[in-house]
Length: 332
Image (cartoon, rainbow, N blue to C red; front, side, top):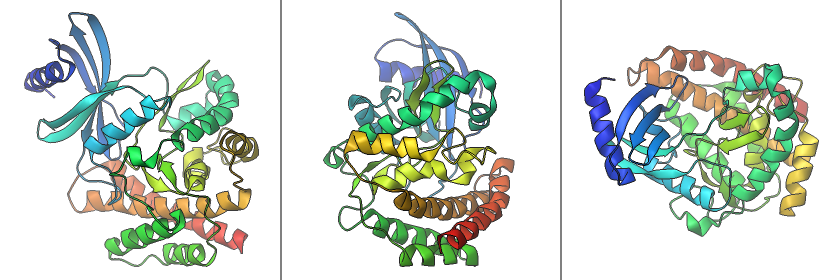
């Protein structure tokens, strides 16, 4: 942006933080597929402060995406519940024409390809399966009534809500995708027993974790898809092949095996979620991401938000559709 942007940002942050603020640096981070993320360094009378400003982009991936006001409230609830997540400083209704909220900036690495491949993260990769199970246990313990605005399954099962939502999203594309249709049919015919309804993160996978080389998990980020759903849905989301970032032999996000992660979660929560539940939600996750990737391409093709990254995601949708077919063949 420019000096006008910095001045507006400083004014808004001063009101939000209730102290005079001078913006020293504001840089738009690359890679945000649905929201802008700005890393901002400010000076206050109490000293320097590192912030992240999360600002609305040009459209959303899924129709049930939370507003930034509600995402900010979810972040605050998670932080108060002891989840490793950034502290929220508050919501801005209008930041240069778009809504935004401000949170603390955590230090570490979040790029999935680096986390699964670089040797300096070897120790973190050993700790992450246990840490992720522990954080999911905390997230799923957040009382749903604390977040009354969340979309999702307030009655019935999480699978019923997911199938309704996926069908609606696919219909909105207004074009045929037989592999996705077949995936939805398989999901309808193989629905497992419900494991209850919990507050779900909705995008719990590498790319949305801040990780330190030595400490492992530092924070869980990006809560825009939070909803009420089956706990196995969150558990299975990092199993989706796209979130392994090329390390396909390690089914849990390219970092480890699934069984110890699942066992740790069950011990902490007292649930008895099995590998068959995770397989079902892995199929559902791939169906969901295939639709999401197509939605991203539509944002580009429609002119809503021109982006090479969004166009590439549309191309990758075919790979996810192929994965859906592979999985349902394996599942019978």
